[in-house]
Image (tube, rainbow, N blue to C red; front, top):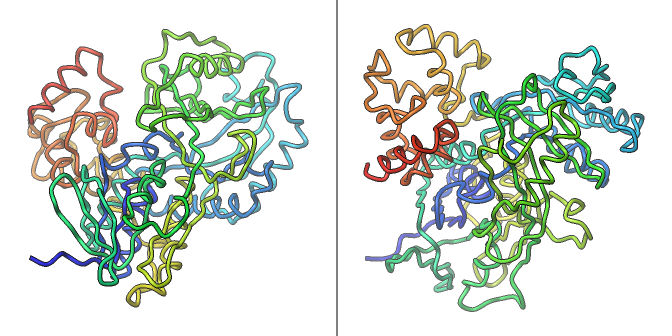
Length: 495
């Protein structure tokens, strides 16, 4: 049987890979995406879960990156209002840190570098009077508010994969690429443990921290050395919701970094992130005790009630594959992306280096623009205006749509419906189907995670393991007690 031929093979199932696959397939290209593990199984599920311009990047004069990211907030908010929503941030001023005048000037730029349709502008706050000051230490009297957006990062990846599949792409997970070679003017891609081979007119190497490893798979390298990235580990901790901390908080540290404290999953506060060099395999990244101490110390300096290690209910670490621009500190390394195209007398391969979750869609557009001369004529890109799966609310706000959804499904607990809607948006109806109460959805594995929902995740969202379901497609694992979590993991392993 002859090998299947694709216009484009994308290697890597993180946000950049799935974003490129979604854009390319929507333009009429035949696409295969291969992911070695699970979608969003590494960096793309370990972010701070923000769609933001990057306020602190202004200090490094990255005006283009900030402008692009600020504009993308509005685009992504319209594309996926079920998993992306506005969040107000409180930035307290503390003596000895950045002066208030500097903060005000930075926020003025942040307000005006790109147009705002939905998000409000920044404001000065008297923290002694504003409710947002209630959970803060009593010596914090002045500050500012500004707006960015929250995102369920792992679900953003999955929704782009679904969009790609529905436009004709083939998405294969737990299928590592073993070898890349050239034959007859096409790439030959050897996939998985079986001797499956496909051919491609072009390849995108979007393997994130493993971008260099994938480049080394080429049997006859065309360059002296593979592309390199600077691996920087970012760690987060999760504690029970800090009373009154219902906004996001941006805290300055004396080392010049900023740390976020964010409302998370209804009952928790997410605190992060750190920035430390990652040595060894990115898969081995773990939250270290020193990082926990760093995050607890800065949160305890700003919040009225000190935090202690025994309050940590979950922690996670991810490795950012940054473009190594020679900066001395990890904090100063650019979060911008770089695209390296190798083309000429042989088929093109595009290496994706760096980037941030907010600008994934613009990165995809730039990647397709570079590849366009080497591929069949493409249709015009439509990702700026096409909703992601579940985000087609017909111009309504999420709350307006949800009120109607809850009325139509009045036999269900409203809290359950909201959790479902925040995961699947309009596609929640595919899970509920003809059911009239939660009992109709089969066994409950805890916090409303039903057998029906699990079947949907396995059939439609490439979920295969307990971790895929409990920690990436949902965050149900966070809401379960340890013994309940173990029972759920054991049961899911048998399904």
